[in-house]
Length: 158
Image 1: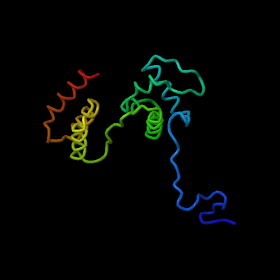
Image 2: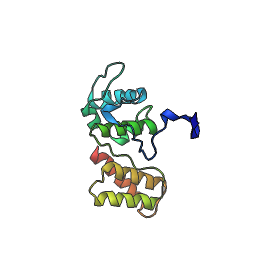
Image 3: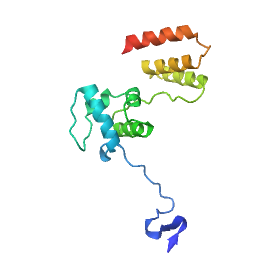
Image 4: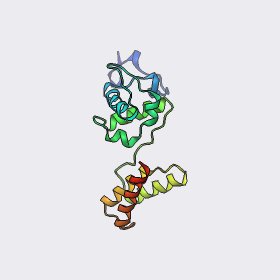
């Protein structure tokens, strides 16, 4: 006999039960794509030579990762990036996500102000916000000053 949604009676969760989200990190293995992205980054960031086949990234590699680096890595789309960030979180390493490209400039600036107030503003976030503001030709901060700030931040903080 079938219950609603054509599920057999034995597979249905009890009423009121909360379904747990799968645990990220060491309890769950990374997808092959995520492992391949991390293998390439391991060579670049830590000079590690990962073995062929199933592999788990070192803590040193996770600490060297940034969301900006993941976003620019070959074959690392949003889904793979989210998987790697979640997995690293499960290993106790927090990789802060990049500023989302959507939304209004005032919302973006408000988010930066909030991050700065909390003491969590990074140079990468500043550069990303300024580059976006330049692309959108924002008049709130003079474009020439934005360009100068981006150049200063890129040369000083890398």
